[in-house]
Structures are given as C-alpha cells and as structure tokens.
Length: 167
Image (cartoon, rainbow, N blue to C red; front, side, top):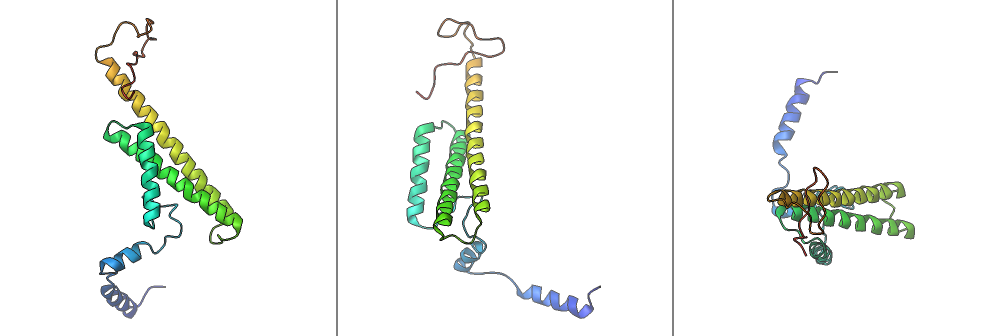
C-alpha cells in the first residue's frame, strides 16, 4: 500500500530533527549501544584499566616470543594477540555460563565464539609463518650459496635458508 503525502512529509520532518548524539560523551555512549560481550568486535574491547594492562601484557609477551622485525609482522602479532584476547573472553563467558551467572547467551553461541577466536588465532599464526618463510626465502635468493652450511645442496627450486636473523 503506497504511503500518503502526509506520511511522507511527517517522515521527512522527523528525519530532519534527528541528528544523533552531539557531545563526545553521548557519542561514546551510543557507540557501545549494542555491545554486550565484545566478541564480535573488530577491535579489542577493553572496559577498564585492568583489562588494558592485561592485554598490554599479552601483547608484550607475544612480541617478545615472536620478535617481529617489520610492520607486517607486528600487525600479524597484534592479530594473534587480538584473537587470544577474544578467546580468553569467550572462555570466561563459558565459565560464567556454567556457574549460572551468564544468561544472555546460549552455550552454543559461546562455543561458536570460542571456535571463531581459535580459528582466527591459528590463521594469524599460519600467516605469520608464511610471511616469515617468504621473507627468509627472498633474503636467501640474493646471493645464493652453492651449498648449505651443513654442506648439502638445497633441493631444486628451494633456496637454502640463511642462519636465523632473529637469534
């Protein structure tokens, strides 16, 4: 059924009045309107300083473990940290569900979020490995030696890897 001219005019005038939040506080409050658990967020959701410190500690530990050498590796390590943080949040939600204090989400939904975080972490780790092997191969292709340090010739098409630059 088509809308009348009065309905169209009313919708237009109502739309003209609606401008959304104007203050920084209102914008910050409205940006979190639909957030319940932060497991679908593209960015890490840190609600308080203790969570910020926990995430920063995780990121520092992963950077120490992986020792990224360029911006791409740093981004992949951050993706690993983000996925690991999401996994921790999902596991905490599951614990609260079993305790009976989490009623907003079903166990099936929580387990789906856990699986998603585990897959994201594994994918980021795999991409970091692929990226590192590609950069090591490019470094090895420049002046390729005839034999590897152990005296063996590399297989055809696969250049010998140099000593680990991160060691």
